Image (cartoon, rainbow, N blue to C red; front, side, top):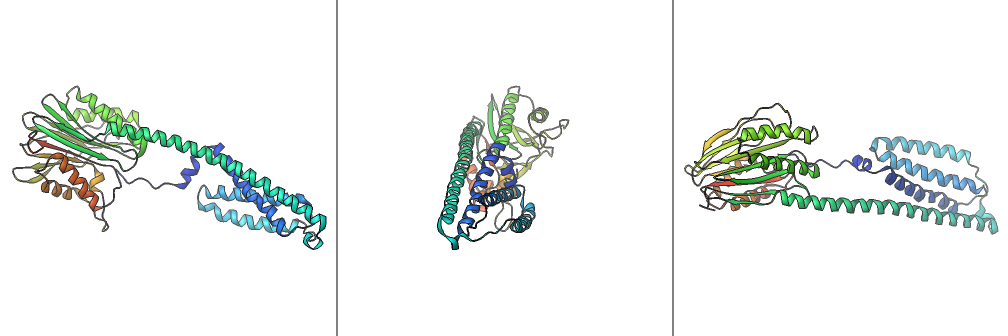
Length: 385
């Protein structure tokens, strides 16, 4: 429904557990604590080694503060930098300078360099242990998340397979291409005795949450169709059920058609793009629409359906806005008009070929930014299929 949101780095920091964040900060502390020993190696003084340890602690603490300052955003970076400069100047005035051990040489210098070397060794090992612990933990979490996502993708393939349904009166084909690992679109066609119901639905958002709600929508539609009630009743029932199964920000749009044995077609839409009706007799496109609210927004919303007639050879085309809203380099959307032109140009081909032609035309127009779903129904059964 919309392009995937930009990943906020602050969210990545907030996603870390306190234990993981602690491991990372301890590792950062020891990495930069090494600077205290390195500085002393370059300019060893006769002051107490405790002052060297103080500089180590100071260097590590400043590094931790920088990490914490970057985590919520760049606004705190400058204050921390100013604080570091001021505190460094103040500490430099407090710490006694002592005499250089390089000029004196001998055992005092060797002793100090030995202490510095041991200090570097200890801090480097400690840094490696804590950083490795952090990386291993996050790697394990990533493996588990990837495993869960793989399962979700498998469910997606099972819940939204390529649609192919042929009856004596209607032939359908449909496909959904998610924009991420888990999509929120539904494409489905169901044969009911001498009728066929086809629909597409578009759940707001992306990812697993949208995919779960998509599964709920498909299950609810399938259960509803067992009662053979009207499409308007289908939308009303979905609108009643969804609010209790989702967060307040999510909603779903839906477009559905019911092709009856006498050639009549019931259609209903909830916040969705118009259904395109290709009339073979005139080789023209008509837009079928019932302007109504999306599902799951207002539980008391009322829904109606419309009726039209279709002749053999006519096509009913349902798409999601993942196709129409694709933009090219000139910032032009693909739009419903181009959808209609592509349908007319390929109207005599099988529904599966029309689906492929639409997706290919959109792909040539611009990059995919949202889930893309198409359902084509040809009236007249196997004719032209």
